[in-house]
Length: 359
Ligand code: ADP
Image (tube, rainbow, N blue to C red):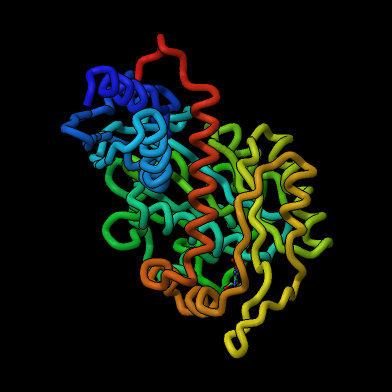
């Protein structure tokens, strides 16, 4: 291969934006190898675990650019992990790269299921994820994940979250009150608990903290927006018109407290009958996509009614189904990747100034 072609390939790889920071892979020290022999090119790129969910996008984009610039070349792309710990964010000092709230206009649309599924999917793709159940009025995350126990408090007054497996910290009011007890929240108490969950829990270093919000109300969103800069919110809704009206309110609520809306998810969008494989649009279909367009909010995808998901949630086996059932999880994979792609596009549209430290 000619020197000129090698230089072209180095340039393509080096200029590609790191999905996490939006800055060029070369400037972030993430190009580990570009070597060539006759016609094959070996490229090794280091990506942070934050970018792992869209690693295939990076591979496809770089390969197609190389093949377009140097026709006939065979590209072998390898990935290694780039260590880049999260900075502390907000006054409370949480160490997380992207904090994402999952909200809905009303209850029962599958918000908690979607929040937990997104968290589990990010984790399955290799990211470090925490899940915070801020739905203090009806905390259902412990049930969906089959988790129980009481978080302990260390001598340093830090809350030890309950962990899913060895690696995913989960915090929920459901761990602190009896399942059949109602909690009556006064504003300051709510504010205090959310801040405590965020700032006093031993989350460790996270790529993503997914927050399951209470439906409808703006109190928790306001508290969050004051506590730390969120990457944004995902709004879950079902396709029928009445549900969409509530979703519009949720979007307007997030916008009011300056939390950017990262996208809408249409849940319970169609049902494939296992008996005849026909699709029935029980609640309609496509409404959220249209509304998202109207409101200039990205549409992240649709999740069909999936019996495996419902039974898994009821039985506390959501994590197992996300791990093992490729057909049931495929639409959630797509939504999760659309979300991370959206974050990457935002980072690349406004990368941090070159003069800032690039930790
Ligand atoms: P919310 O948090 O909005 O109140 P949940 O996540 O608790 O809603 O879901 C309500 C019910 O709907 C649960 O029984 C859950 O298993 C079920 N559910 C949610 N999404 C789906 C889906 N895509 N397919 C089948 N059942 C679903």
